[in-house]
Length: 79
Image (cartoon, rainbow, N blue to C red; front, top):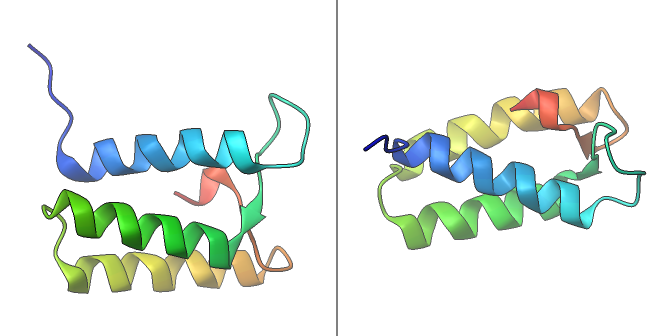
């Protein structure tokens, strides 16, 4: 049986959340505000318990740098 590692599973969840929460048409880059992305990612990482906090913080910093280039929006391609 194929199992996703915790990070892959978390990123898959974030992709789905972005597609649900975006105001863009289906099939697009599904941008959501960094604040929303950060809140959801941190929450899911915490309840998952498999992703260390320092990795979560480092990942979110990388995503914020990309979002800052897109008027504060996170695109699926950023992660």
